[in-house]
Image 1 (cartoon, rainbow, N blue to C red):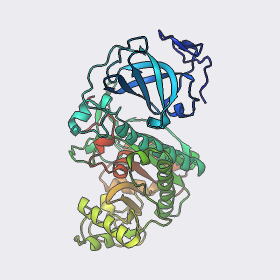
Image 2 (tube, rainbow, N blue to C red):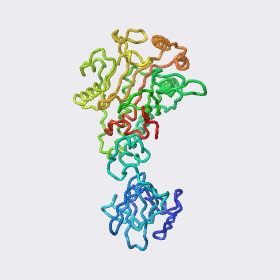
Image 3 (tube, one colour):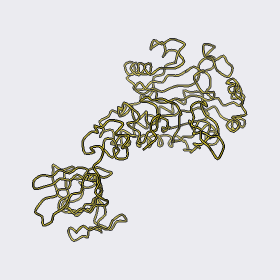
Length: 463
């Protein structure tokens, strides 16, 4: 319970005092703590003026801080004239806690004294006091620094923050070590066509497409590693699901049997993220349904998935409409918001992907031996949208040399990466979750930009 004790963050104020306690000596009370403060106590609040409603003899002010809202009542005829600052002005309010069942939390602050902490705020570009933001997406993105103050918008990132806590907590409990890898790299990870080139002290370098090479090398150190960080894709997509920069939740683990071991870890991670969101309170404020992750996620082979959606058997990948159809199938047949598709064609997977042993030749065969058609890789679909790509990696040096040469490239150009495989690497695999896609699907956003504070895409570099 807040008490009128000296606080390190107590600021000097021009306000008066209540109950014999100087306002400058009051510890700050947060809006969420106000309901437990005894009526009649003096309090000091700090936050933004969220809403003002002026009536004939009284003005109601709603103060917003990081924890919620507090109602402040300004009545005429109390011996002083108070000028209520405009909306979004940051202020300090000292006053007396008064019981009022109709106020948020059953209490309000009366006899207030206001101390502006900044100049009077200009009118916001969006109406933050309304229950929902009604401005179009371009307006929200142009004024992101203010638009994200809206409680419902802010709750979307609270979903993301809870997801990150769940991600880390699940992996920490399973013996993983968090690592940080370079975002300026000397070679492309996936392919040279989709990287941002930069001038690195007169030498060519690139923004990392993923931490793939480095997280594999760190398996040789820690066995189990993960990273949360930005990745960059110079793909000129102008769609609702693509960004040029997004947050990737990467995991890599050693001593696996095949990609199914990786998928089992992924299941635990997704469940941990969902549990963290469910317990954060943000889901309730947004009114969203957090999925229950089944103990066994349904799995389809890529060839069976093509047949299920009526696609030609030589299709190299799943189209968005295929993903939606598979999502509907998983929900109808298994009651699951998730479905994993394994065995993607080797021709569509990166060179470090392990082939499906004995899968035989076929269109697009591209394994190290040139005979395996399918791979030990998978995509996890969440409510009809690709969320995760993962699988087993090659781990023998000779296989890497063969795979790189099969692409018409010189293994010497990958020497720093391949060095780890010359010195003993365990069978391993991993996956990467797109944070923005996960959050967008959770909250029902039609566009990943709606849940990205400052998105970077084909057209946007500011704010």
